[in-house]
Image (cartoon, rainbow, N blue to C red):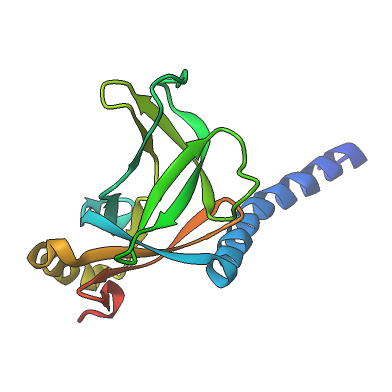
Length: 180
């Protein structure tokens, strides 16, 4: 039987630590955002696809997923990392206020994402969180409820330190997970 050298043992332990560190880091940052982030409501469009490997989930599409930008600047039409600031309108729903390529210094109402410039409409299209997993037994009822109330659907998110996490999807002010 081969004996492991000290270097092999150290490499083995480091690889195990990295294997566990990545999901733990994701869980901790999402939990921190959920507990202490600023809450926003966004109007959404959703549908319920089925994926053999991931099961049923709501694929969420924010109704407003872009920011009008100054056409005089030189924007990249390929996807690139950016920071998006968030504002709230008079009806209580949030919207994407501006996009920048440096971390905003005067506000904490932003999240880090990717996006691209659409030159013909002078818009910067923003990538948003787009999957909401739910109980598979409730997903068909949730989909039909959504289709019946397409204009009364919104998502609640929390934003903190450049991270955006989906809290829940609501139809007619009812959390979709509580539907029977």
